[in-house]
Image (tube, rainbow, N blue to C red; front, side, top):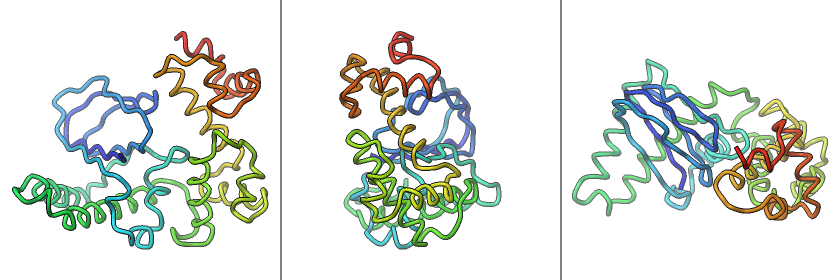
Length: 247
């Protein structure tokens, strides 16, 4: 599931993939499928949790707002925290009330089309808030944005199989330089560190939430030689996988 957490009021702390965040009122938090979400503390929390699958959404959503997975939910560039601008708060609350009323009504769960389209409106509005917060260039439906979206999907599917920028560029029918120019345009970084960050993110998950050995984790991430994995992990985190797991 993709998950949207709306905190209307209250405070506390939670963690997404091990990164601790302070819970703030009047804020949306976005958790992509596969990410590990933990509530650490919560005081007087009031809000909503919305979970949904990609298959639940209408097919036209990608044309309406670009690609919502790229804008809101991905494991590479996601900005987890979306505070709502004061002038937009009333509109968001009204929309959330409609969603909840439809979901809890006697026939709400069977009326999938209404829920589907209300959720689409929410995602489009969140996408606008997100794009105002993050650095970007071009429009969501520009050729460069289409390629960036395709790269994030490829990376999610293949990060454990190939670590080479050239392989992703070849799959997209562009050069490695063009791919890095596109990623730099949208997130200010070249493709190589994005690939490495995705590997380290998965490594941290496996080190924290499984009993797999470092050698087994290296194998899962596509490293035939565990020492190569350990060198990358230490370069990116300033600690070894063994020490990270022990702590």
